[in-house]
Amino acid sequence: MFTFLLIVQTVIAASLVLTILMQRSEGGGLGVGGSSSGFMTARGAADFLTRVTSILGALFIILSIMLAGYAGVNRKPVEIDTSLVNQSAPVVPNVVPAPTDQAAPATGQQSGNQAAPAVPLAQ
Image (cartoon, rainbow, N blue to C red; front, side, top):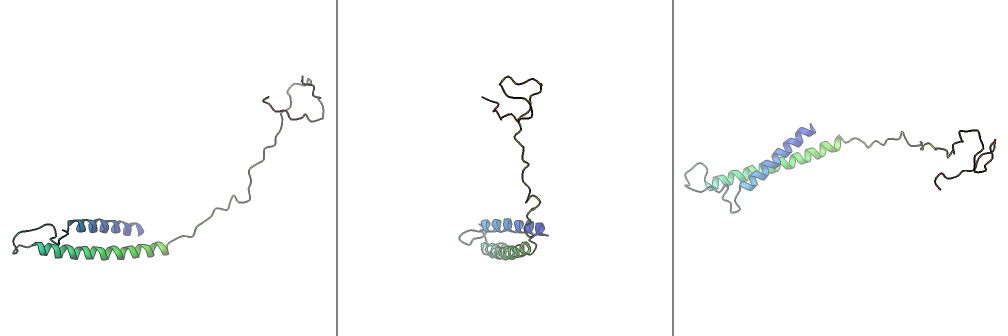
């Protein structure tokens, strides 16, 4: 329903702009001139465009109020995702890999049950 009203509002706004742009600033309306006995005289066109402008303006205001009311009534509350609240990133222990061969390392470290001191890899 909101989308339909929004499309109607857009069409009315475009029509309102066009009718305003067709009017002459002096009140001539459509720039029509000629005999006064014709169907659309300059004054008749000005009266017609003035009425159309006022009707389209009123429709535009009414639809704006309706759209604001409709959007306010159908507004959903903000939902916050709390599924990750008390979770922390997994801690990766700083483990130095043990040597693969059973021989004692050449750096003079002891092999056995004692933990080897952490040595940075890039020196």
